[in-house]
Amino acid sequence: MPARMLSLLILTPFAIAVEGPQMWAAGWQKAISRISPHFVWWVTAQGVIYHLYNQVSYMSLDEISPLAFSTINTMKRISVIVSSIIIFHTPVQPINALGAAIAILVTFLYFQPD
Image 1 (cartoon, helix red, strand yellow):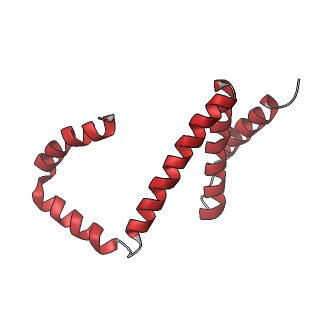
Image 2: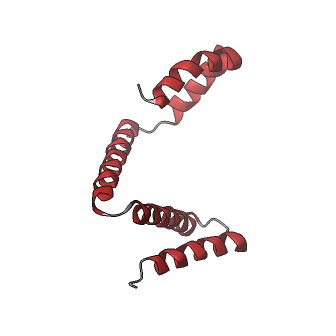
């Protein structure tokens, strides 16, 4: 049994005991009222995309070194952060921009031919 499922089974009774059934019922009703008609489609699509991401990751590990894979994964994270900053117009502190720039530069230098 995956660790996430096991933790869900173990922690759910404690969450209900601490927060109480009334809070759970109110939260459930609020969540249901905010769900769009396409909720099931979006959850299914997200699950399929995440599964495909994991498959591609494992297939990539057969083709490249673990260090290159880790470096590419770091670059992926930075690209997600930068694209979300651009799309959502999130204000960025100069120190955060410097950190992203350093990560991009190091990734670029890593993949330069010898």
